[in-house]
Length: 379
Image 1: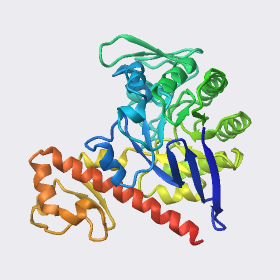
Image 2: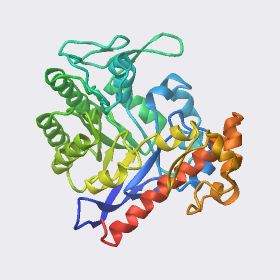
Image 3: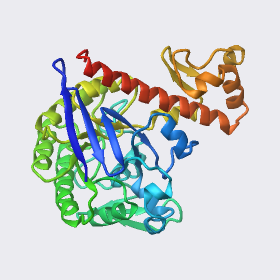
Image 4: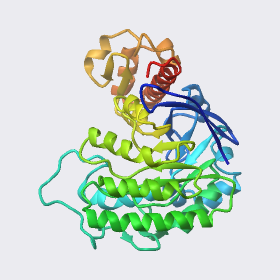
């Protein structure tokens, strides 16, 4: 189980400082949650991840179910032992894959719609091309061998219990930004039904978070937050699609957070660009996960106090300065832009490691400064 304590509430916004206590240690909130999809932050070992100031990681239930399988991990002593990470862990439920491997793949879109196309929508009875969504769960096709894989609320909870993270999530359907009202309402009813099943099925002492859905529709979002807020969840994820732009996302956050129990932690799922972070914290998000720092690092991008740097550009081969003169991470203290640029252009794996380390350290330091500002009453 977890214990969540609110230490300070902002007088200027809905931001708050908190302390989340788990069996594997404390998490100071607001907190950036690093993504460790396959029980690893890509290119880093667990000791290196600790040194980036990462407090808690989120691991992917669906991918670990496919390989190596939850039984392998359970026999290894659970995720903490398996990946040698003796700090708090979360596992998602697999609900995001219902979107990403379904309608997200069909239409080539993410959770925030970049451009709305006329007459492009998902209607009431529509099904994704590669999945089958039923009242009991979802039939996937394994991308490893093409076999059918069924995942529903009961299966998701059993898998997550075997994986053994400190915090687990209820199984849900993450809807598409182009789902119409009728489809979204039907999906929400299903997600709420699955939430009750997840609560009933869980036998472990792990903390269980419900996930608020409802798409871009205010009445459905408010309904979902109210419904889940009345159930005995230990905290809440805020998931699904977030409309056509970031401003719509912030508006949705306002709708939802108003309805959730104040004393329980709130986790915004899959959002965390640097420019988003202060704004989602100001609206009351306690935790948020995003693959941005690691994903961008593998493409040669470093986040710095002066903006993003593309180390793949030839101009950096003449630049002897650190990635960021204001950063105290070991990469900035020991390596130069021209060296990292050379490694990246030469396709050396070490470039990805150095950039990933720096980016995670930079993101965690960025949030650390926001916590300080909340403490000082500046946010």
